[in-house]
Structures are given as structure tokens and as C-alpha cells.
Image (tube, rainbow, N blue to C red; front, side, top):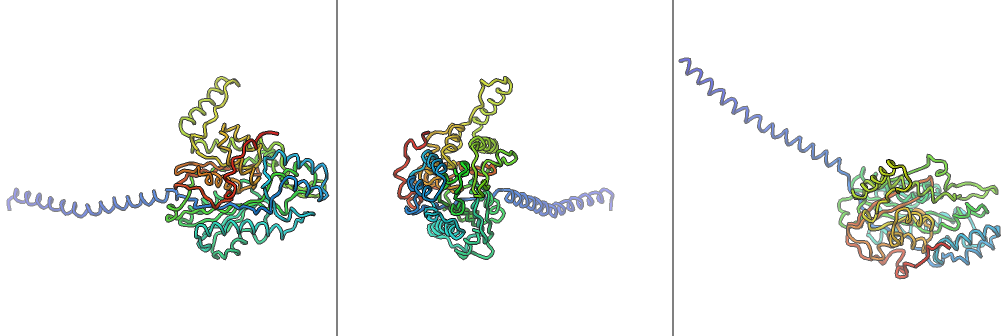
Length: 459
């Protein structure tokens, strides 16, 4: 064979080998690209936060026989051999409290003499908790055995077995339910329970969580004469709420709200904040909860720190810029004439649920955040109708907004709760359905009577 013929043959053979190689490598290359794409998609899916939904909630409405009018309060305290000065002090506080004649207490505390017993406290807790859970389950056709996570919270009443165990027993829930009971967390425990539920629902996907928030009064009524400890008798009243949260895909179409943010702040590093609300024993060995005069200032400081974390998540860029610009100007010119800009939170939220801890607390938040009267109306009316109902108050306020027919699809709600420690916690929800006025709430018989004018006026 001639040399040029041999070279030509080798060239043809090389071309065929390259073609075969391309045919072999091409499918492998495609497979590799597909594998990388699948891994990237899986990683993105794992990184994406599971949406958390609020399916529904229910608030306890005490029967009218549990009412505590001011005249009855004064009479009971007088005939219960309480110190006359202590009775006069409590009546003075009650007159300025912003309460109606409809707030309620446990029947055991309306007796003369008052009976403080564990059996009455357990009866009070079971009455409230089982009532709200039963109504919530019936309304939403929920089988108790479908609940995967149960969280109960009551700050100063922590029996054995726990309140969560009582609920499991009463409703015959599953043996593998994840059950938790929170105590000592104060009036902000409701949002702390939501935060715990959120984390658990994201770890255990396609799960259903039940939260029950309440506070029992039967064992915690103070009978001494220390003014700071008598305040709890004047402020706290009977109430509770059950909340149903879900991370199940099938629940998004029947959910009311979608969780946007939860921000928690604690200022217990400061001694004044830590001792602001404190359970202790007085010189006569009588137990109670002391509420400091500095509670309004402590609440304001905690709220500022909470907003510093929440603001960047919810405020429009314009509001953030104006706030930052005012701080820079104040630092550069070092003069008191330039005030720090207060962001307009109405640009971030349509509704506000401020813990109804007392008239002074509501007024301080309204003033510091420059809110409108209609923004604090749900809190003011909850305080007026039900009193300070601890960690469940933010749900009575949300129920008020719904009962008034004000909630619309796309509206955003800011829940703010304060509690001992001292804590300020925020939860942000977004309405995801067309809401109709709910006639089966704790406000069902009286919503047409509100708002009541001038109840927040200083006497």
C-alpha cells in the first residue's frame, strides 16, 4: 500500500473513532448535567422554608354568672376580712382600670371567704381549656387523634401531671404526640408557644399543632396588703384561647392566615427589667405577683429593641431610610432639636393586636408608635370587655377584628405581647382568605355594642 493511501486510511479511522467517542460521552454528559440539576433543585427545596398556616382559633367566653362588677368586687373584699386600706386601694385602681362590669373570675374567688385550693385551680383550667378546644375541634371537624403537636402555656399554675397531659387524657390523643407545657413565661407565652410550634412544624412537615393559652386565678389571688402585689387582683381576669396551626399542604386552602415573622426579645440582663414582674412572698408570708411602677418604661425599652429587629423585615424602604437618616442627622449635629423619626407602621400593617396588659400599656404603645385610635381599638375593647386575660389577649383582639368584618384577604396583622422577664414578642400574620364576620366567637352577643367611647380617658 502506498504511503499516501495509508495516511488517508488512518485519517478516516480517526474521524470514526472521534464520532464514536462523542456518541459515548454525550449521554454521560447529559446525565451528569441532569444529576447536578436534580441535586440543586433538591437543595433549594430543602432550603425553602415550609409555610406555616393558622387554620382557626377559639376564645373562651365565661358565662354571665362569673361576672365581677366593681360593687361585687368591693363587697367581697370587705367581707373577706381584708385590710380596709387594701380594699380602698384596689377599688381606686379598679375605677381607673378601663374595665366594664362584664369581666369575669373563677366562682371559687367569688365566695366569702375565698377558697384557694388546688382542686378549684384544676377545675378552672380544665373548664377553660377543654371548652375552647372542644369548640375549635367541632367547628373545624378535627379529630383529636390527628393532632401531632400539643403546646399548653400557663404562667403561674404548673400542676403535676402537666396541663398538656390533662388535655391528652381528656381528648384521648395519640400516644406519640409531641407534648409540651410552658410555665413562668408571663403574658408573652402565647407567642413563645407559636414560635415553638413554628419550629416543630418546619422540622416535622405535614403536621398539625394545637396551642392552648390560659391563666388560672384560683391559687394566685393575693390576700395581703402590699400595693404592688394587689395590682394583679385588679388586672387579671378569666380567659383562654386554643389555636390550630398547620404545615400540611392540604390545609392552605382552608387556612385563615399565613405566618410571616416571629421576633422575640428578652431584657432580663437588666436587673430592673428582670424584677419588674416578680412572684414573691410579702412580710406576712402571703404569696403574690409584684408589679413594679417602672413597668411602662421597661415595656417601652423592650418594644424598641423588638422593633429594631422586626422593622427591617416589614417596613417599606422609604420608612427605613427616613428612620436611618434621622439617626445620622442627630449624631452629626448632636442636638436635641432633631428628633428620631418614628416609622409609620400603618404602611406595614393594616391591623394591630397589642397585649391588653392595662390601660397605661396600651396608651404608651399608641403614643410611642404614633398609632391611630382605631389601631388600638381591638386592644382597648378587649381590656374593657374581658380585662387582662394574659397570654390569650392577642387572640381576643384578633377575634374582635374578625367579628367587626374588618379583616380582608391580604391584610397584615401585628401581634405584640409583653411578659415577665422582661419580654416583648411580635408575630406577623397575613390573611390568605376572604374573611366573613364570625358569629361564633367570644364577642358573638356583644360585638354590636362596641366600640365604647372614652373608656381610655384618664380619670
